[in-house]
Image (tube, rainbow, N blue to C red; front, side, top):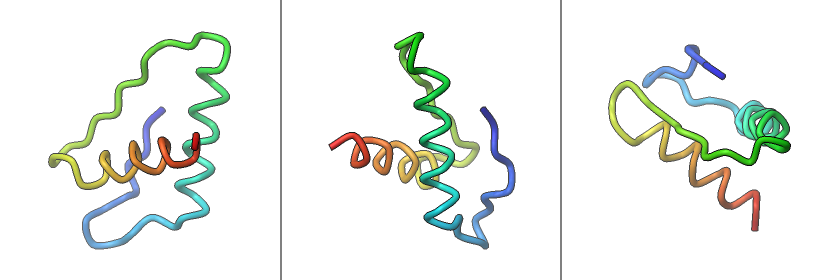
Length: 58
């Protein structure tokens, strides 16, 4: 899964972020393999993605 439209200048909408995480979970549901999240500039966006994903599981 890849998303290139989340730039430093523009925040992603919370609705889109939740949809992306939900799609990722559905894709991985049967496989139950580790998921790798990679960002191009460090941990800002990838960190938000991972933390939001973890919070959604709570």
